[in-house]
Amino acid sequence: MKAIVRVPTKITVFGEHAVVYGKPAIAVTIPRFILVTLTPRNDSKIEVHTHGVSARLSSIVLERDSNNVISQAEPADLQRIVNYIITALNLCEDLLKEEKKHGYNVEVRSELPPSIGLGTSAAVSVGVVAACFALHGEDPLKRRGDVAMTAWRTEYKVQGAASPMDTFTVTFGGLRYIEPKNFNAQEIVYRGDLPLVVGYTPRHGTTAELVAKVRSLRSRAPLILNKIMDLIGEVVEEARRTLEKRDLEELGLLMNVNHGLLSSLGVVNEVHDRIVHVLRRAGALGAKTSGAGGGGAFVALASSSEDSDRLAKLITGLEAVPVATQIWRRGFEVLEY
Ligand code: MEV
Image 1 (cartoon, protein in one colour):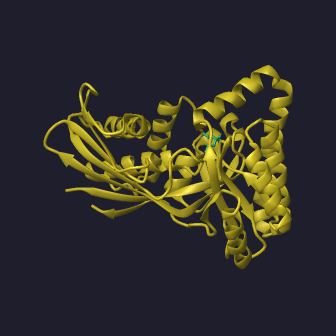
Image 2 (cartoon, helix red, strand yellow):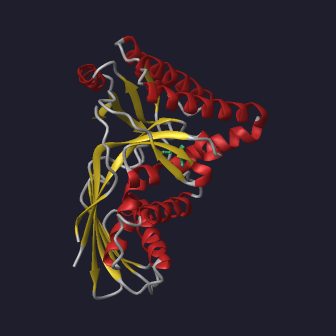
Image 3 (cartoon, helix red, strand yellow):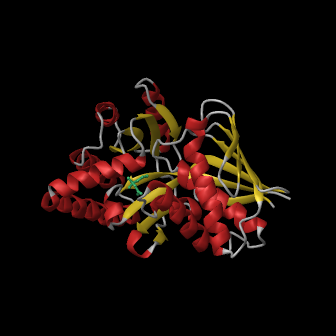
């Protein structure tokens, strides 16, 4: 008996950081996936194998009760992901009122490296929670709200701060308008191609560190920083209307404005500033840092899908890795149970 869950990753199109302070945001899933396989064991050990999450194939075994590590391959690489996995399992079993006695083999396969702002930790949390639901006889697709909420609690507990944006977007999938205050992830209906170009560069700092950096800036100049957060919230509202009107030119302009506002929060690095300028000069309608910043993910808007392929080729010459030129319209899927 085992459960295999495939979870898409995501890109934040508008509103990162301000979403931590209750402002809305817009995010969309992309066709790059995390595969989580959860298999119950007869003992109380947790054995984690990861592929693609760190540089090499990695594994770790720990005793469920004590969290004592029995054997480990690359502790530094694995520590973060193991935190998400154990927390997700504990919260899932708490919710389902299960005794925490089960051991599991957990396999995580990722097409993307962690900590680049594309929601990989959210995807791992959602995958583990959904697989845990399935193994305990609950259909995770019928309980998507509970899966998203439990995965958000996982991120919140591990990171110390997290908006529901990433976990709710990868749970439900597609283009989502996130209202963090009431944990709502409403679908924005957008037919046809949304010609985005998604890429990443190496990132310095974790999401938790970058969120803490913005928090400290806000405590030093609350009046101004609160106005910037309000303004980001207004850009998001305008972007939602613009998406519904399918006005790509205006959407690009709003992306550029959002990039400038992220810059004022101190989370845009020099490499990203150069990339967004090159992309705009090469014909992108707009381009911005995406996610927590400090490098990591960025997103641009092309005028057509042919043009997004051209821009994706261009960014490989800018020391960036292209990730997607299309959006994905579904959330997590249970591939086997
Ligand atoms: C991280 O993908 C985006 C942030 O807004 C943090 C969050 O939403 O939890 C920086």
